[in-house]
Image (tube, rainbow, N blue to C red; front, top):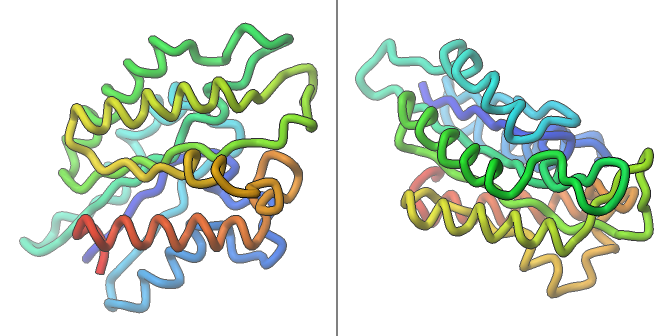
Length: 208
């Protein structure tokens, strides 16, 4: 059995996908599961989750989904986090998870994941249309998202873990056309994310 657990937030869950394919994770599942009888991909994205929330549940979720009944069983973990960590609460200066705490969380997520597998990858955040701000009195700011994206990249490089950088790809292009509500991708945005993630996972031998 080859199972993949995908942790994340509302973008992992697939909010905003007008094609009802459950976002990039649903598209990855459609690609991955037919390749072998016992392939299984689990969407463990929970809207509103940040790195603190994923840390709190990763052990339980992995224990429930990892199969090691047979010698050739495989288990992989994909973690997509960052946007909700950067959300500033009640203004523009107080992120939900501060930069130093975010870095510690990513290191701890890697450490926890390695108890279950060495097949680990992180998906970086996507930029937002800042005209949506404030969102319920809170702010999503691309400058801060970019900082947290660089933290992810740095830690993954240090730990020799695959990092899939979406932010820099999107920010260099007309990314607003890929958004459904200024925060979540639309169907075309999710297609774009899926194609990038599939390519990177295949090139790193985490997918065929």
